[in-house]
Image (cartoon, rainbow, N blue to C red; front, side, top):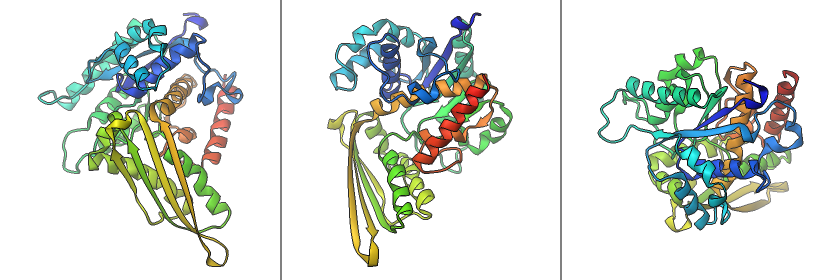
Length: 372
């Protein structure tokens, strides 16, 4: 295989969801020169010449329990303003190719297969994908809807952990862009430690928590004690429906609150509330209300409003992670990559402040460049 023929697989868990569809369509659009790579950190100057796979070399596939074809899913996203009108038809061939590589996920209700049987089946799908497409390596990224945290007495692995275990068995690098358990199940600890593969994070940082990771260090650096920090999220789409489940919402909120506790030294008063508003579709509004003390005890308030499209915020980060993990795998790196904490609410160690995480990421890019 020549250098120019090297192809890298990107396998999405939740491959027909909004985030995966946006990432797949967006990659095709950028590769064709139809749109600039807005939001892709790996397309900025510090990441040139570090050996990342080009966007034109990425081959997409995945698992999903839904059967809506990707081209139709993309048309729905365009109708909702997530994708530019006309883009689904412009990249229709690429979407159809990716759709042909999507395999049934699970387990669905009534599935009698054991955990081991499911892991074996999912791993076989990954191995077949790599073999047929002559891939040098594959990165598995979980972008499925948030699942509730498993009960302590549950003797079955959650779906996210089944997919994660299959990724390791198939020799694939892995990232978990959701708050779901994934590789962090205690039952997978031995497999994770022995796998010899790079993996990263949990729960992508795209909006409200991104802003929190910028603002919280400001209060610390200016010696302004934070008394309370409360937030509300209004969102629709698949995430809104999934997070209407209190157990799933609790898993999501844990990451949002962890950023504040890690940065401020302790969690301030206040909670994050998530409301499902189906009419909002793939768009989200996040409000934060921050109470803090100023000089001589003067009490002050900072309020922020973040309005955005989660899929469009997440998709470029997903493409970044796919490229960085593929390069890390090629370079022989193994284990949790704390250097990719810039992308996560719940990273594998490292600093909590965004500026420090970015500096760590830049240093990591330098290591990859030096290792070429």
